Image (cartoon, rainbow, N blue to C red; front, side, top):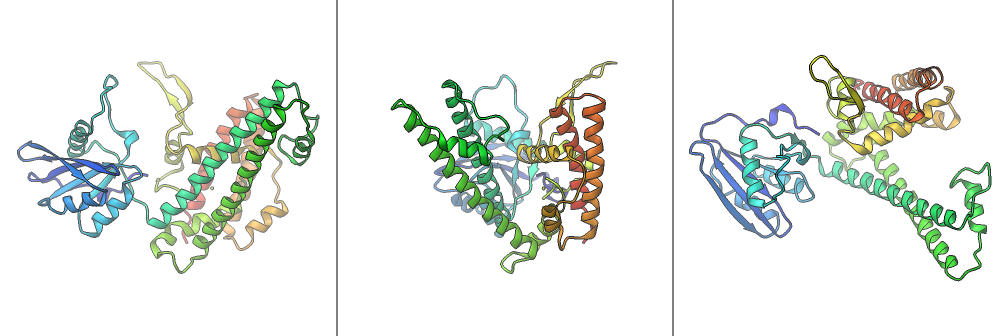
Length: 373
């Protein structure tokens, strides 16, 4: 997430720019003096907290930056507590030479210090500790989803190699399909333990997924209801979007001014390669959060069904803001028509239709997230 404008450093002739390449056991820091152009490098032994101690010895004014990573946010929080100007940049937005295949910590630090002084780095917002903990839960759930997909593909290919096919009219990995898998027996001594081991790994992953989903539901509920141990500023950012999510089919949004910016942020807009009088558009850019984009597209598939308010949705909408419920119903009606028009009338592929519907669904998410309290 990009940083706000108030994080821009003031223009000063005596300003010094510091880049710190932080590692678990040793870090490298480079200081660029704007007045003299002099560059000095320093190796800092020890854990990342030693970087804060070293920064406190520098004479202000200065601004320090380092790339976002597992060692970054805690360092920035400790530095800001001591009044030090430290920011984080997004590694994916750093300008790089296509022919540059040499990576050295000192060299990278010098390049980043120059880019920082020129204002060419994309800064990111440092999340609160509670928000970062929620992110870890979401990341763990996503990693587990990938592992579960892999083991299911492995089991499917194992059965195909032995020309074993699931009965017709059974939903893959549904209740009937699972019972059929449990009934399978193999005559050879090798296949039986391989299949049992794969199914055991699958069942463990399913149990872990359910455990993580319960933890996610409890954490989201705490945020939405305003648990006393949550800081007020964290609750203010999460309360409304989290309470609003259950009201629609199929999910915290960045501070973007319009739905179009959100679609671009999520990479749900067509790529473009235009030159002169020719304009050529291709597939979606796939920029931004891969996780958020996948969730939107997966949710978009639900809008191929006729609009209705099921018992499950009614239960989730209980106690919600009526404005959110109205937006959710508008989304169902419009996106269903959109799906029918693109798929039935224009004969677009279903995968293409799902992406198009997901892009419009992002606009409804933006509308819900920007409702005034």
